[in-house]
Image (tube, rainbow, N blue to C red; front, side):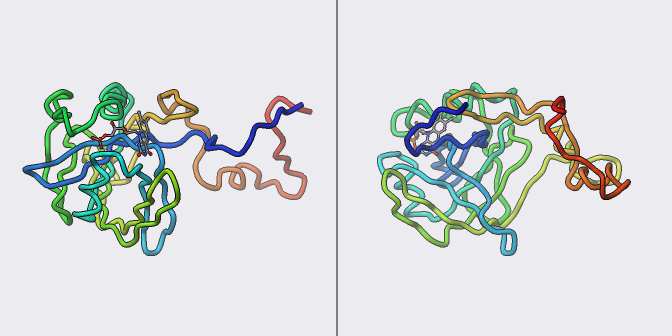
Length: 199
Ligand SMILES: Cc1cc2nc3c(=O)[nH]c(=O)nc-3n(C[C@H](O)[C@H](O)[C@H](O)COP(=O)(O)O)c2cc1C
């Protein structure tokens, strides 16, 4: 039996990311849950931000941001950057974070985050509580330590965190790679894909 609630934002898990805005001299960090990939070719993403956030005004003016992916070890800093405003606090100093120059935008990346997506805004949509900043992903930066011997990205090494209904989680057990349902069921027509443990 399911119970039903009115329509709401209950999609889970979502990434909790630390988004940087501004430039090397004047940069701010805002924690964002409302983000995602919306197109592969060209690679496009978005962040949705309430107009009252300090970061919103900076983003409207500069039209560039960086999405810094957050390892579980940085979850506390991520939460903090979503609790206080850059109008009053220097979040870089408070969290002991380091600005690192980006390749394609003036906004700095957070050096301590293992992956970063540099983004340039193409459209701003006023949706209601939030404005959606739709953007091209102009560069992706990865720590070399995330690459295996063949130069492939090993996501497990990033040990990322995620967010579900107001709670942070560490990304956990690996279940399989893209297409594994087919690869393991080569024996054909009679393959079954039922929930594990159910007859
Ligand atoms: C996990 C988490 C996710 C958040 N997601 C968003 C979001 O998607 N959009 C938004 O406008 N604010 C979001 N916030 C709130 C802002 O991060 C928070 O108001 C922040 O203090 C704004 O900083 P600023 O005033 O320096 O820009 C989130 C906060 C947390 C902790």
